[in-house]
Amino acid sequence: MRVENPTPMPRATHNTGTRTPPVLVCMLEKMEPDVLKMVIPRKCVLMLLAVSRSLRDGLRGLPVHVHARPDEPLRPMPVLLGSCVVAQLVVRRRELKYADALVLADILANRSKLNYLELRLHELKQSAAEVLWLAVKDCCGLESLTFQCDRITCAGKILALTACTDLENLTRLNLHGLNIGTEGARTLAACLKKCGMLRHLDLGSNYVKDEGVKALASLWASRSLEHLDLRDNSLTEQGMKVLAACTLLTDLDISSNDLGEAGAVELGNSLHRMPCLAHLKVGYIHMGKRGINELVTRIGNCDALQSLDLQCTSLRGEGVQSLAWGVLRWKALTLLNLQYTQLDNAAVGVIAENLGACTGLLHLDLTGNFISCDGVVPINRAAVHWTRLQQLHLNYNKIQGLGAEHLAGVFAHCRELAAVNLQANHLKAHGIRALEAALAAAQSLRVLDLRSTRMQNPGVDVLARCLPGCWALQHLDMSYNGITAEAAPSLGTILSGCTALQQLHLQNNKVRVPGASALAGALVGSTKLLHLNLEHNYLGDEGACALLDALAFNTSLRTMNLARNGVCDHVTRNLAELHKGCVHIT
Image 1 (cartoon, rainbow, N blue to C red):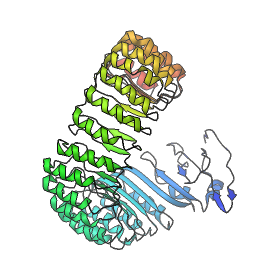
Image 2 (cartoon, rainbow, N blue to C red; image 1 turned 135 degrees about the horizontal axis):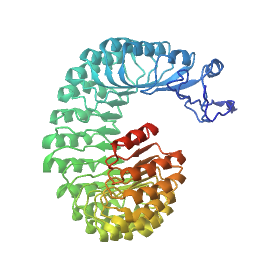
Image 3 (cartoon, rainbow, N blue to C red; image 1 turned 135 degrees about the vertical axis):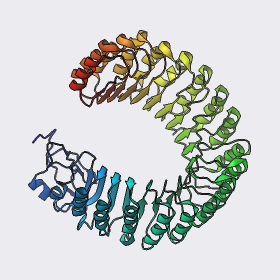
Image 4 (tube, one colour; image 1 turned 120 degrees about the horizontal axis):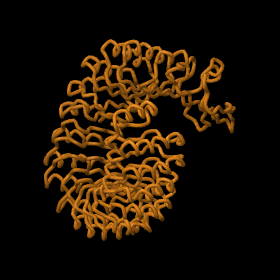
């Protein structure tokens, strides 16, 4: 049996009565069915070892996390686990067959210590469902249950819901996307009567409608429910009235429902009774001018708010003023998502002026608005106070070269920026040049998206000078920028200079054979790069072969996309055979 990087098993340590057991990570391979991935949830050393009888005896009594991936057989698991205490079980399958269900039932038998069960399936047959849920009902210590399945019979859904009847210790239930409907909501409400400790309930994309929410109302009115996800459930005004009973909520997701103007007003009235609300998502809702104004005004009274998602709502006039007023009160705000909210420069100026008071802001998303140079100016002024900002998304706006000069100031103020997205802003080479000094000093930057910024070759030359200073950069996207073969030396410099780079996207350019050769030379010495995308770059057979020859000296690359590059059929077959699973050529 093959063992990689063996490490001696550390002894358990004892400090003032606390015990830190070892962690065992065993990877299950197709040809070696007696190897299993298990992780003991404690602070300890990671190892890669084969499971033997003596090792299983050593694990006896220790809590183990078991993750069954889609390509792993389930049959050997009961024998491998032996008398180990299974604390968590995660199963991901395209289809759970009857035989697999019997194996899972064997694993779940007498597992009173199991507290976390996650089942993500594409299809579950009725016969398998009967076996599976009968076994789940006996897991009396279960605290968290996640069940997601795309194809399941109505009877199978009922079995899943009724399995919750005896799980009195359940604190977290996730049935997202199960499509239980109104009748299923009524059944669930009856089955959860004994679950007095329920705190987290995810019913997103279940189409329970207003009647289903009313059936569940008695459930959460008598419990200290803290997290509720009801997105995409066809809820209207009547369903929003019921939410008033959830007075202890800290997280609420009501996105993608049919609230309308009246529903938005009722939601605002319900929010007024949630003093602990910290995280709110109300995106993708058409609520009219009065509805958005009333809702945002009510949200402004949520003093404990930490994150707000208003994406794809129309913020105009009074709505902007109400939001700006609320921002002044949200001293703990860390995330603000205003994607596609139709904000212009004036609206951004009003919001940014007050947003400067949120000194703990970590994530700001202004994607898809109408922000140009004049809108970046107030953002730059407010950024003086955002010393902890980590993510800034300004993609799909109208920022050009002059706006980039003000963006450089944002980089200077926000030293902890880790992700910046400027996709589809026409910065051109002038804009990239304005950011040169800021990017060279961005020591925390990990993700930089410059797709469709029209930088062309001069912009690439600028990046070749400044990006090697970004020692933490892991993801770089320069797709759709008209980069040609003349920028080949700069592309090689970027790949070799950014030593932490893991993903490089250059699709839909024209780097041709010289660009491929330069990248191949840098690829030989790269030790971190995992994914390289060169789709549609006119590489031809010569360019493709140059890159693939470099793979003989590269041990890190996992995938390389060379699709739509004019590679002839016999070269495609040969390369696909030599580099199975690594190279995608179409």
